[in-house]
Image 1 (cartoon, rainbow, N blue to C red):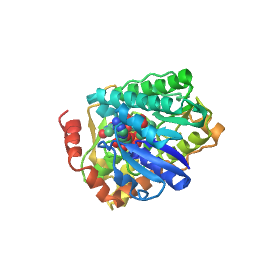
Image 2 (cartoon, rainbow, N blue to C red):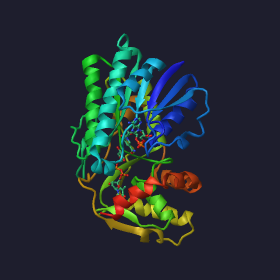
Image 3 (cartoon, protein in one colour):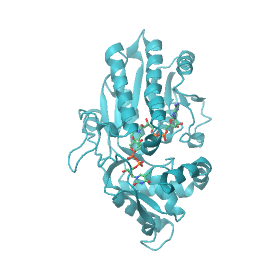
Image 4 (cartoon, rainbow, N blue to C red):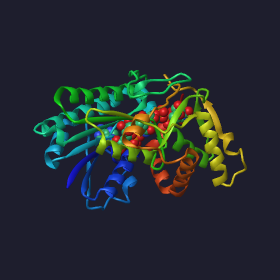
Length: 350
Ligand code: NAD
Ligand code: TDX
């Protein structure tokens, strides 16, 4: 039986990756290591928590001793590393937290892998999950490819860029079998409601204003989270060592057009008159250093490993809305307590 450590498995994307691996590979044992920060939630994995090939471990990747002990105890075959501080706005108010988890935490995992696996690097894989934000911001044309020069602008993207460099350095210097993927914006179920889509669904449902930064003309390239999880599966199993793949949906939307589509879907679901939800749109102060446009060229992944996105955006967005409307308990649980404090600081006291 193969043992794979998935870090950050209680978060948004991590929970989809854990679910896919636990259910698709009964001959793998999946160890989910997560600190359970505000973004980590074991309720995301309720449906698979009792499976015999799944173990949850609560812990912090910033704690090097703990990480080393975990590697010694579990005799891991591979790591899929998703644990991170992931919200750009939080990185602007607290950059050091992002350096600690995203940079130091990643180096701690790399050191543990180097020490434990040094006799036979080729039998073990270190998969680092990263973001398109490391490439910076695009003008009106062009796309990020795997060879686009790094040009991060936010403390979040700078910390992810740094962690990518460390992973490549450990591959080149010590011979660790490492692969990296850089993905565009994900959407889908279990997404913490501080990011644009789940925050807007929550606010529309509760008749609260939808805060749009700046002009709303910034562009993001949206991918269904389960398509990201499938790409991670394919890359983990098939990529050559040292390879990088871009993952994206060829699905660019300005924020304001996306929110209008979401309002239209929610008007129908909530039996509101058409145009009712869009009245909640409110332009607010722009994000500092706000990247204008992301667009991912994922043709390398499509050609070499045969991965293609499965869902059209309108269908995926409708499924996402349905999930949030059918999971009120999940939403009210994550939006009580600290969420309220965060929301007031981010949107009211500007
Ligand atoms: P998330 O914030 O929803 O989840 C992150 C998880 O990591 C949480 O469960 C949290 O508890 C855990 N974590 C945080 N700090 C930790 C620590 N010090 N030790 C152990 N666990 C810790 O993030 P997400 O959106 O699911 O993103 C997952 C990964 O994918 C991140 O590496 C992110 O950079 C990358 N990514 C995200 C997107 C996106 O659109 N969300 C796109 C591309 C890449
Ligand atoms: O209230 C808001 N209003 C608004 O206009 C929020 C939260 C966001 N926005 C804008 C900012 C962005 O242009 O919407 C766009 C999307 O914002 P986020 O959902 O915060 O995502 P983004 O900053 O693009 O980063 C996401 O994609 C890349 C993830 O959070 C990262 O983890 C991932 O690496």
